[in-house]
Length: 510
Image (cartoon, rainbow, N blue to C red; front, side, top):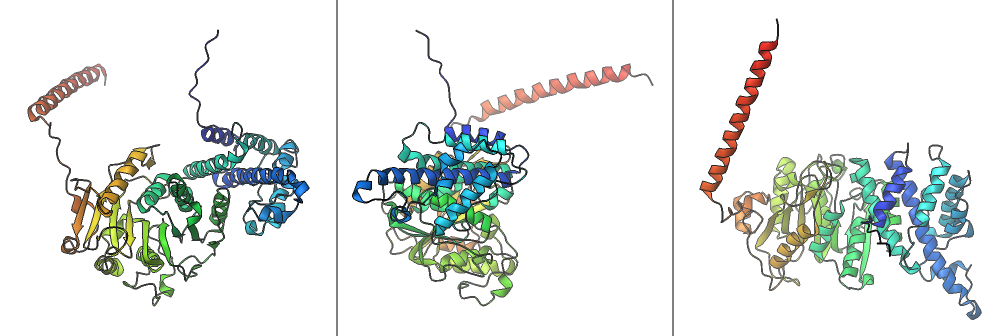
C-alpha cells in the first residue's frame, strides 16, 4: 500500500491571496482591492440568496414564491436578480464582455436592495483589467466555499474578506493604513473593553474592523449577537463602501454607519448618541480638522483643543458621546501623553482630575501601516466609582508594552495572542472586583492621581512602571569572562586583518 503524501497545506485564505495577487499584473493594489473584494461580496450575497431560494422552493406548496423580493427582505437576505447570480457570472466568465456583465450585476443588485445603493464597485469593465484575468478571478472565488457546508460559506467568505482587507492594506503600505487598523490592535481594544451588550460607536470607522471584532467577541464568548448595535461615521466615501460590504458580509446591520465628506467634527452624524462603548483609531495629529470653525463648540468641556492638532478634539468628542457608564478605548499618537502645545497639557490635566482616564497602554513601534509615529491606547470611563467594576477613581493603570510584539516583515510588527492576553489580563485583574493584580517593574504600575499630578500630568507609562528587575541568576564573573574572551577574539581578528592590509599595500607599485 502506497504511503500517503503528507503536506503542510497553507490556509485557504493564503492560497487564495497568492492566486489572486498573481492575476493583478499591472493593476495598482489600491484599485485591485475593489475588484477582488467586490467579487467576494457578490459571491457572499449570491450564496446567501441561493440558500433562501432553495428553502422557498421547498415551501412553494405552502404559498411561498422564490422570486418574491419580500420573501428575502423578511429574513434579512439580499435579493439577487437572475443576471447577478453567481452561477450566471461563473458561466459567463470566459466571455470578452465579462467586465460589463459584472458591472451590470452590481447595478442590478443596488436597484433591488436600497441599503446597498451607492455601495458596490463598478470597476470591472476598465481597460486595464484583462477579461481573461477577471474570468480566472471569478473561477478562483467560485472555489472559496468548497469543502464547507453551504450554510457556512458566509463565515468562510467573511474570513477571506477580512484577510484580504489586511493583505491589501499591507500591499498599499502608508495609504492602506487609512482604511485598516491592524487586526492585533483591534483585538486588543475589544478584548480590553469586552463589549458584550449595548451601543458600540466608532466615529472614524474606516472599513469597519472595530465592529466586526466586537460582534466576533460576543460570539466567541457565547453571548447574544443581537444584544449589541453599532453606530459609525466615515468621511472617505470609498472607505465607507468597504465598511458597508465588510459588515454586510458578516450579516451585521450597518444602517447606522453613515458617510459625509465633512467628517465627525463638522457634521456629526450621531449628535444625540450616547454610546456604551467607543472603539476608535482616529488619524494621528491631524491639522486640517476644522478647529478654527469650532472654537466655541459644546463638546470642549475640558478645554478648547488647538487649531493645529485634532488629538484632544477627538478625545473630547469621544467623551461627549459616552453614556453615563460608557467606556472608550482609542488609539492616539504617543505625543498626546506629554504635549503642552496650544493648551493640550491643561486639557490632559482636566481629564485626569475629572477621573476619566482609566488606563494607558504604550504600544510597540511599527504596528501601524500608515505611520511610524509611536502610539498609545487610552482607556476612558465615565463611571470609575460605582460601575460593575471596583472603584479605580483615585488611580490610573499604566502598561508599557513597547517590548511586546514580533515582526511580520521588515516594516511591520504585530501583537501575538499571548501579548494581547498578557496586556488584557493585567488590565482586568486591576479593574475587576476580586482581581489578582500585582505591579510588574518595567511593565505595569497603578499610580495614584497624586503621583500623576506631581509629574505634571504626563501620562507616559515609562515614568511610572520603572525598570524591570534584573535576572536573579545573573553571574557577573561568568558574564565578564565571556565578554573578555569575545574581546580577545575580536582583537586577534583585527590584527589578522591589519596584517593582510599591510601585505596588500606592499604589493602595490607606485
